[in-house]
Length: 202
Image (tube, rainbow, N blue to C red; front, side, top):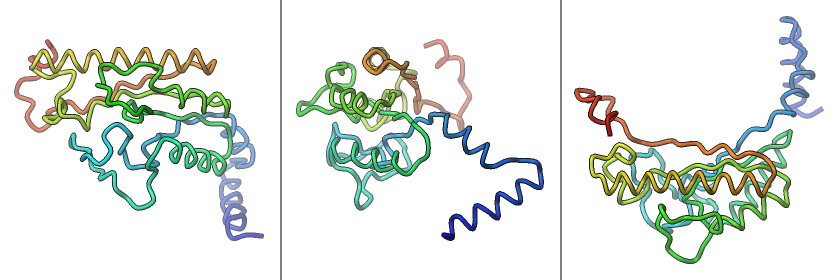
């Protein structure tokens, strides 16, 4: 019996003392799909701005050794992770993981820029959730996107969010399972909340 199996047997006994059947719990958990974040494979580097700093106030560097450098490498890493995690899961993909040789502004991304991801997911029979990328961009350098006082910058990010909803819908249609489009933004001034109303009115 391996050390992992021995440890599990000990934990199983302890949980049983509280009336918890860990085998039944694990069997049930295996039916719940989790959405694995793509950025765990490369520390949020993405593939649109190779070599650029991530920025946007994120506490990551995007430069750890052995990180995925291409969409194909990341897909291979994700497949390996899926092989080690019990159950059938999903991928949560960020917009900055676009797969194209051309520079595409974030407010101009379209489903066709993620075709390789769609084809890959369809081959694995998994669902994909989608995230806009409201950081690591010159128009997000001040930490303000959807609440930016500059209307041009704000509209840029609104257009990005709309484009990402369309991409999420395309993933759902192609894969036969709805995609959750997670609108996470870095905006916020928790340390200086003197004027909360202004940004809510935008």
